[in-house]
Each structure stands twice: as C-alpha cells, then as structure tokens.
Image 1 (cartoon, rainbow, N blue to C red):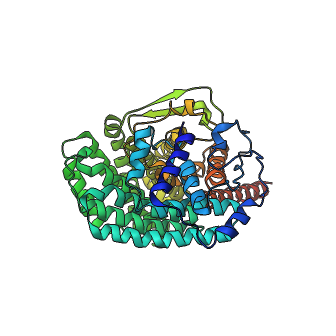
Image 2 (image 1 turned 120 degrees about the vertical axis):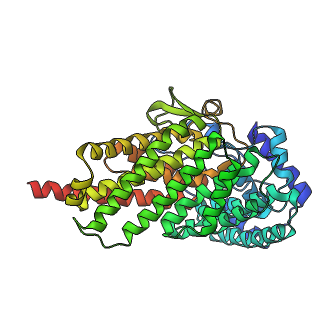
Image 3 (image 1 turned 90 degrees about the vertical axis):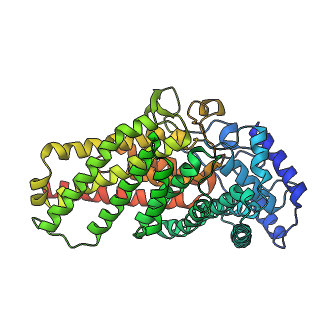
Length: 488
C-alpha cells in the first residue's frame, strides 16, 4: 500500500512543484542505466521495495539494483529513493493516506533536502560521482531555502522549519565518511533545530507543551558532543532547565534527570581522557569514585524511567538476523523507546570506563571497587547491551521482516519522520557490539545490522561505524593471540 502511495505522492508532488531537468540529467541517466554488480539481481524500479517484496538470505543482505526508472529524471529518482528508503517502512513514518498527504503538504521548503538525501544515498550505492555532485548542489540550495524559511519566522511553518533543519543533519549522516566529522557537521544543524523550537516554547497544543520535541533533539546531541570532545554549552543546560519546568510534576520529568546524568558522564569522560593519571594517586582515586557515584545515579534512574516509559519483552519466531535471539520489546511510544536506548548507551560507557580503570590502575581500583562491584559492572554492561540489540526492531525494520510482522514492534510515534532517529541507533548498536566482555554474538549481530543499513540505504555513517567495529574486533583478536603466546 505504501509503495503504491509513495508513487502517487511523487506524481502529485511534481505536478504541484513542477519538475525541471538539470543539465546533468543526461549524464546521470546514462550512469544510472549502467548495471552495477549487486549480490541481489532483483529487477524493477526504485519505487519497489525489494527488501519487503521478496525474502532475503539471512547470511548476506545486499542492496537491490537501482535502475533508472523510465519517466523519472534524476531529481525525481532521488525523491523517490528518499520516500522509499528514508521515509516509509520505518517505525516512525506516515501510516495512512492522510498522514502521507499531511507530510508533503508542508514539504515545499524541504523538497531539495529530501532530493539531496535520496541522491546521496543512491550515489553512495552506485558509486556515481555526478549524482553525488548533484546531491551536494541540492544540499546547498536547501541550506539557503531553510535559512529563508527560518528568517520568515512564520508560526504556522514551525513543522516545516524543523523538518528542513533535521533533514539537513540527516544528509550529513548519509553523505559523511568520517564519524567524527559527520556527527560534528550534523550537530551544527541539530543545534539550529533546538534554537528554532526553543524560540516558540511553550506550545500550548503540543504534548507537554513541546518539551518532548526539544528533549529528543538534545538527547541526539550527546553522541556528537562525546565523539568530537566538545564541551556542552551553557545554553544546553538552560534549555534542559526550561524543559524541567515544563514537565514539573510529571513522571516524564525523569528524562531531564537522565539528560543531566549523561551530561555529567560526558564531562567525566573528557576529564579522564585529558588528565595524566597514575595508579594509587589521589586524582585517580577521586575520578574512580566520581564514576561510581554516577553509576549509582544511573541505577537509581531505572525505576522512575520504568514508570514513565514502561516496556515489555516478548518472544517470537522471526529471522535471527532481524530479531536478536528471537526477542523484541514493545514500548508505549517512540520517545520512550529512544529514551531507554540513550540510558543504556550512557550507562554502558560509564561501566566500561570503570572496567578500564580496573585494568589500567589495579591498586586504585582495588581500593575503591570491591570485587562484587566489578562483577556488577560486567553484568550491567551485558544486560544493557542485550537490551539495545533486543530493542532494535522498535527503531529500525530489517528488510527480512514482512510488513505484517513489523506492526508487532512499532510504538506510537507522533513525528511521522521516518529514518531521522536511525543515526542514534547506529551508534548504540556499535557500543553494544563492542562493549567489554560481551559474547561475540553481540558483535556479529550489531555489525550485520550496520552492514544491512548501509547496503539498503547508502548511509555512509553506517559503513564507517561497521568498519570501526571491524578494527575493534581485529584489535581484540591480536591481544588474545599475544596473550596465548605469552602463556605458551
């Protein structure tokens, strides 16, 4: 139904917007007609969703061929790729004819960034440099249009402004190659989205007066801040304080407490990385104690989070590559599913650093971390890493799953925004797969998921993180071999 609907939407959109062929259309058409070598030889247009139309091997999910559809110029192909791969068939995407129509009714300003994202994904999969240049050109145009849209400050266009800015960030994730540069560039746009939304709060008609929308943006910024080693700005904490006021007296206010705990984690990680530490030194002892205190804060947050954002674990007969250990979670809403993964990711990093202290500073650790606490660190890491993998179907639909099955995993979403929540999941999957002492099965499942996302969506960030996972595994294997050699 959605494949058919997306084609109708494209026709309707181009009837309204007009479709002018760019000077590069001829060369793009020629490039697109060349047959790339894919593992999956399925034919058909890009409007078809090969990942849902036919079963795929659980051992190797490869991207479908992306031939040039007769009647669509390259810009239309980019738009259609965006609709099929980045908008539809995701947990938080339009679900009815009216929702699809509503999404595109305010999409005039975002048209070029949608095309840019679609063309970027296609060019990555096809290796088409001309298409990539056109994607960048559309991105630059979208930047200018978004700036004009924000400058107009039309209250009625808030959703369009936010959608444009967040989609610009998505382009950076699709197009960017280096993880640090990618998240840094994307974070610039997310900062802009926070500023746009903060300027109109409180919103009387929005749930929690708009606090959830701001918090989702703020939480998505933690990973870029941590990866780029950038200090959190005073404005970040001021916005958190304002959200706390909007949520005063509500169970969901614990999400602000979680944000403050993650902010503290980022600060402590930066201190640990930029301080010369020595074993049995008072600075080292003090830092270990601060991490232990922070982990206690995370532990105490688990109960209020469970009350505010309850979830349940279920089992079912699903492909092993799509549903980890045949288990999945169900959440009340999309925001709840995301807040839990932010909690899991952050607490894993906190415990991972404690484990690292035990290895690098054994005397200080022995004085501050009892054996039972060290054991708890490992069990907490494995439990939360497994929860991240188990929750994956709530954030992303593996192409091996049929549409009927995906309905079992979906939470209620209000953004109808498709894949915009996926970049955070990519990082969470890598953290879960590379967490210390977790089974190799965790690494394999997370790595496979990142590879599938790359091959289906052409998202460069997924490929980059999967390569980081490979480097991590290679390092562990070398260390294990050296240890065996020493014992021998």
